[in-house]
Length: 226
Ligand code: DC
Image 1: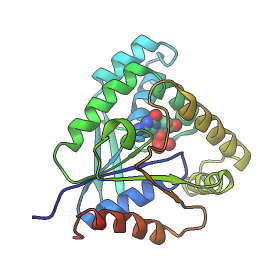
Image 2: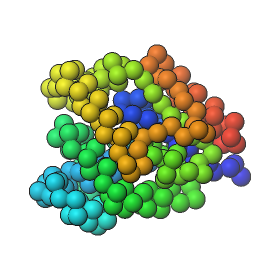
Image 3: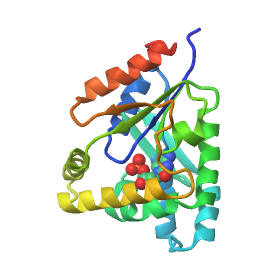
């Protein structure tokens, strides 16, 4: 039996986590878990229920909302209390509110518990901000992705354009900088590179090259390709 590993992929928005994590999971036949989608689902629910500014109500939501991730053939579908929210959680109004929600201690502990339960004993590729540091500190493979702000803004703007959402590159860059600031400076499990994580700068890498590098680290640690 091949060893079932945990692969943690952390880094700021637009650094290439999602695209790499999905493809690495496909190559290893592992479960793929997008933890950011869970913070987004809680944020969307908080906005829709009009409690986005209320810390206690938001924590209760994080504890009680039934967030499910369904990953198949490169696509993650997200459900909150049974309703699909895959598209809505990527909207600018969620981007603008998600970092403050993710900075709330009680929201984090509720979602971290769910993330650990989802990973269970499976081979897993989990991406986020605190996967290697908090959620799965014993992960055999820890990767910290970085990329220049210009490249990250370009990637996000392209994603919006593909979906027909009109946002200027300046606004995208402003949102990324603001989220970087909040995500890295918050007291509760900030975005940090742990000493045992391997940093990969994806600014000038193709998707194929990123995936190859991460897969190679997993294979080196004992994982097998499917
Ligand atoms: O990866 P993303 O852009 O979908 O994440 C959305 C926000 O959620 C991000 O700004 C910070 C927060 N987040 C977090 O605090 N911890 C995680 N493990 C994942 C995301």
